[in-house]
Image (cartoon, rainbow, N blue to C red):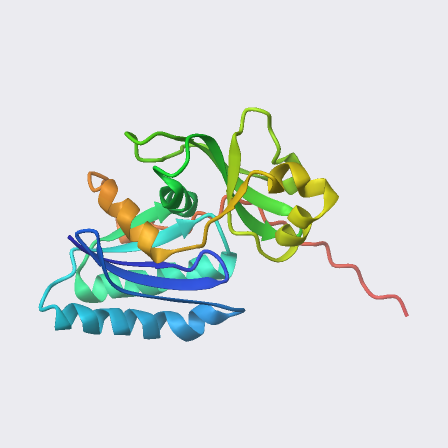
Length: 226
């Protein structure tokens, strides 16, 4: 099965082309506003490789969130357009599921996936790691990173970035830092996870929306004082 996947759920823009578990193309880069600049270029390069293989795409795959508000919108809009143009199904994969897949068969016990949001807020979801069961979760949380520690969690994983990275390095974050595994946002794991759950129903493109898992509240405007 030939899969073209992208992950724009963080400040990393990542694209991968995978065929029956073999990585044929992958490229990623990190930086502010990088998705709008690089995603189309990476996808074009991957499609050139598809032609070189004299093959056809079976599925497109997108990391649907939780994650960056702008990154998710750019990634999904681009992949929807590609799906319509090529008439290829688009499969959504939760970002934390892909992160968990990156540690599958490497860890055991209960792991908590963590994705930085903004200020001191993080998305997180718990996974029970077992070699026989593909990691998945139905419950997602959104809260301050101060609430991350829990006695029933064996380890934590995700990408330490920006303010969350600073907090992990502080005294307040020591309980998380001692059992934290760095896992990059990676389109390869997004593609491999989609292949592992191939029985999933293909959603209608009109109903496919980014999974923000957060409530954004507009700040009340306060008139300036002169």
